[in-house]
Length: 210
Image (cartoon, rainbow, N blue to C red; front, top):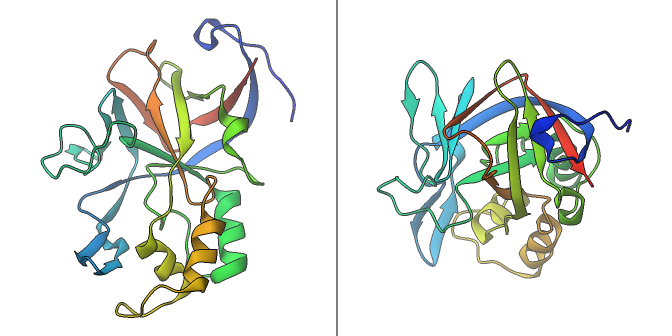
């Protein structure tokens, strides 16, 4: 990919175009239903939104009014663990997931907040410099990007297992495949941003390179 010139928001890092944001979404409730050990994955609480409001507590959807995400630090549902207030995925990762498990795994079904249209697979080290989102408003820095470990419930969902079907070696292999960022990454709004910051579907995303 072509490197482009940086500006004052990039902290003297070059920018590499990745692709536009094609989907923004929030989880209005937990996607894991039931009680252990009888839990299952249900994506029905994923809500697509045209904009996200980002602050140091995570992400809030905006579609004419704020829409809470269960992973935000202010959520009463206690899903926030410190590093999981914001999550990111890539269309190239979904393409690999569908190749393995089937077309029913549509873009965004894993529940990440930001889906970027970018081919290929991005391991965690490639994202170490963080991302820049540029749209009609001020550029937004997203950093501290780390792997979001996949859960057994989502792995069973991908593999087509019944709700009461016990995990086995197939699920172990599924967990391994979905790890290393294939399922998603956690991230944080960069400390130098105005808070809150706002991003929208269609905004362009760039990879920061030293």
